[in-house]
Amino acid sequence: MSKERGGVFARGEEFLKLFSRGAEFTKEILTENARLRSRLTRIETAQTSAAQDPDDWEKLREELSGRIESLEVERDGVLERLREVEGENQHFAERYVEIEDENNALANLYVASFQLHSTLDLSEVLKIILEIVINLIGAEVFAVYVVDEKTNRLEAVASEGQPLIAFPAVPTGSGVIGTCVASGDTWCGDARGSEDLSAPIACIPLRIEDQSIGAIAIYSLLQQKQRFTPLDHELFTLLAGHAATAIFSSRLFAHSERKLSTIQGFIDLLTK
Image (cartoon, rainbow, N blue to C red; front, top):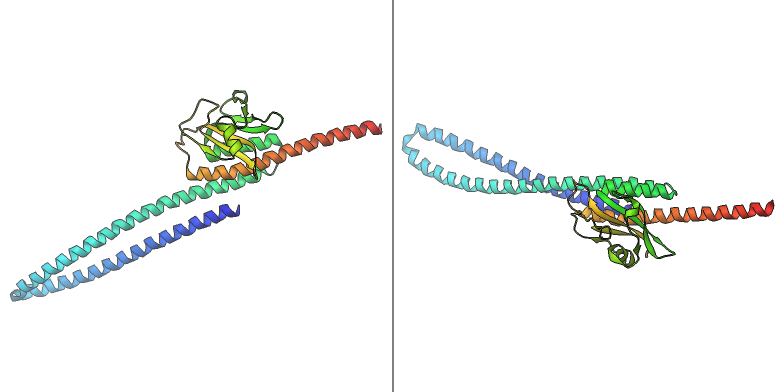
């Protein structure tokens, strides 16, 4: 999780730099406003004096006209800078929301990863993977495939949105799912959804080092989610590694348990 936390800290530092810049602009504007108020006070004082001496009125009028033009130029400059600051503040607010969403997603993924590695029961592992894909990615219809080493085919072992039997077995290297598993590359297509269970809108190969042991194939997203985001792609990468490790460990544990049971049964026969 060090890389994930490093990314969060980097984004936090970026937000603080942007926020500091906005604070500097705001301070400059307040200083400029104070200066303009001071000049206005001096002008009002001069105007009062001129009213007492009509002979100097024309001279004062010309001076005031020049000052007014200068102030108008300064005012336009201040307003332009204010608009720039407002635009940057809007950008800061949007980035803050994005960072909050990313932090929440990463925190949720950390909790989910802990849950994934807290059990060696394959059915529990698959259940946790389904919950992660639903809650963090927002998938509505999807399936988890695992490679059958005997047939070299991908078999659906868990699903959401459709019965498990509806998802066809896929030869490794064939179709979108088989090609993704063979290449080890995540694939994303049109996020509008697909009713063809052989053509998912996204496929995430589950890999341990250089070996693919399965895939998560997504066919449609929840109604409130319109597209995949850059954060989703980060989650794909993290989920692929964690889910693959959890599935591999639970299958290996189940296999060793069966062997142990067989050996124990054989020993019991010999010792009777």
